[in-house]
Image (cartoon, rainbow, N blue to C red):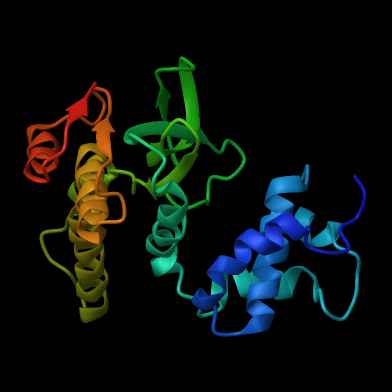
Length: 245
């Protein structure tokens, strides 16, 4: 592919709506270049994207891009909320809208260290694989379709962790360092249990957040049995909205 020399005007215009999330202009420019690479580069790794940009003082290379995307203090936790506020203006007056809740498996056979990746049996591909479980929400009308949330499910390792704690248990410990190490292991196990959420629980949290923000007051909901629960339907109905499978 040809090298990148500038952020395309379409990307720059749309991504400019998110400038307020960044405290530094340099960080915003690096993330803009990264997003350009995600959309246009054949090699979508950070190294591949950084390598496709023409070298220069403004680009700064792979390390500068890594720092801007993954280490800089931009307000990543506010990204999706800000995104919903941005697109809500474009969806006003477009007729009936539906928010679709769904989940899928995102395969990462060569990225086992990526957050949320777990090796397990894929019942769609009928093979063992490494993947993330991802819960998504999109909104659509007759004119537009936009993503409004995406959540990577933290894998449930409780069975393996519990078995490890059982196998490595001792009747006594010789010194405080061993006690401290054991306590840390047990705290990690407890922490992971508290952080784990079923995909149905994630779907409920998405709806709760969307309804609390009130950006799409007339949108109804659609989903399949993969996220269907009584809690989800009750929440939707309490907001005065309809739902369907």
